[in-house]
Length: 207
Image (cartoon, rainbow, N blue to C red; front, side, top):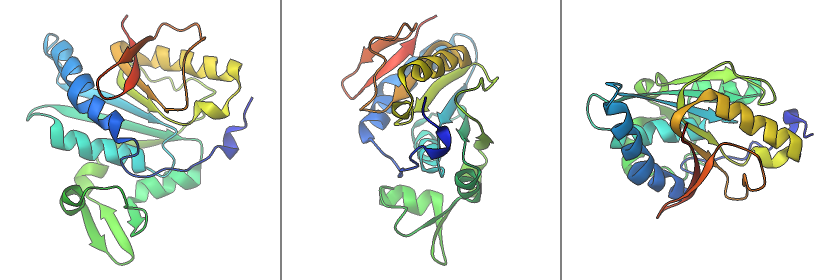
């Protein structure tokens, strides 16, 4: 089993644009159709293994751009590293760290400050940072989308299966799971179904 204290924290803003394209053109429209029938206009997201916050902030910025008025979202961003979480909570990134953010988003959602940029308070308010070890139950439920990219690759097969099982328990029916391009659920006994879209591949919990 991998020691999660030593997982790689390599990250950047808007990593893997294909996932964001699939989010915009497939996942969000599907979730909106489902939720509208229930009178629910809030989308719950978990960024698991969020490192220093670039992923959850990217998701928050992106959803702020594409969601129609009256729709809301909530993001839980978790990591085992308190040091990484402190960076995410601060919302400050150096000039080199903001590479990958489109210029239009940079001007709209971050402020230029000495030594770098700070994420706007309204975007920061959408995210709750939480210290969590993926080898334990988060005790949170009903997520519509889970991002856990380039994390389970560091676990052995048994630990991977256990983590994916805990994601299943935390997710709502008809929800979506994004994992890294180098990761797969192939061969695992899970309830997730493989989904291939025009933009990217992902997994869905139908029940």
